[in-house]
Length: 401
Ligand SMILES: NC(=O)c1ccc[n+]([C@@H]2O[C@H](COP(=O)([O-])OP(=O)(O)OC[C@H]3O[C@@H](n4cnc5c(N)ncnc54)[C@H](O)[C@@H]3O)[C@@H](O)[C@H]2O)c1
Image (tube, rainbow, N blue to C red; front, side, top):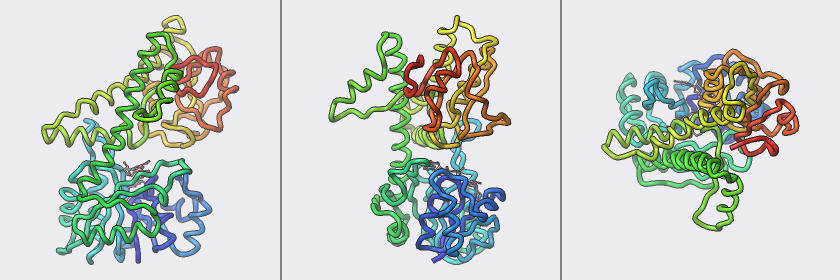
């Protein structure tokens, strides 16, 4: 059985390495640099060890390619490409469209197409199937299924094997074949009654996080105005053994999922005339947190940041990963600069970002902790500036939310 995974990023490479224990996997990506590094056994994704990648390559079970014709004898093709937002913050399915084009142009026998990219309900039925058919050179009846990915890069307790996987095919044959495929490397498969339910469940999971993070971010502002500790209050609430789930405040949400997926749900809701009030508002509250943080820092420093050297500590969107997509640090830096501060940043996990390099963790007037990697020493953060503002709750002794 030969499996092609289109897109060799966080999702695609992770799934490739698991699937390559049992299937011959071709990792198709249109980024030549990524493909070249992968074929030399160098992983660019946290959670996928280069040694394991080398092992799969040596066993003849994995290779990466940019060439469309290398996918032509696949039995299964998994789509794992980005689903970002357009400039107008609308769902952008152009990467999925291009993946469908690869399938249409290079595959001329019936296969199973599985989508793992996150998108709104109806994408498999109304977008992917018609797009593959449009690009196919002859009329072919492929099978189609969805199994939205839930991977959390950098996490070690939950992985492909022990994270329950939702799936559904457009036909019962597609569902059965999808189950066979994933059951080789996933212990818990959850079949739902339609692809639309699977697509909606994935969006709702991340919307749940977006809304609850917004709620706790709003509460952090309320707690500060009341002169009480948000963390002590949350810990107190969390002693309730049922009906409460603890979320913690931050400078905002980041990554490819939480800031983006809820907008896919809101867009499809509004298209169908249904309200998406919480979802839209939650996004605004989280985006505004960066401004709130900078205003708090300014208020503590004489109301003016002009000419102050400010060091942003941690620019990745979450601890222990190098991923900076949609990071809250970007908005924090933007607001600091708009108030006249001279901003540099320290993040050795990220290293280089937007043409700038990680600065030393020392010598600033003000330090603001946006993301705290495990490898960064709290004492060094506290010594890096006379005033330290922490948005993570992990730097005891600093000012904070
Ligand atoms: N990163 C996560 O934690 C995560 C978790 C669950 C779901 N998802 C979803 O999975 C999907 C993929 O996300 P990701 O984080 O893996 O993205 P990514 O940016 O890490 O990787 C995507 C890869 O696809 C390649 N690519 C883009 N268009 C292509 C094309 N037409 N043909 C071949 N390759 C192409 C890119 O070069 C890149 O290497 C998205 O829909 C995302 O929302 C991501």
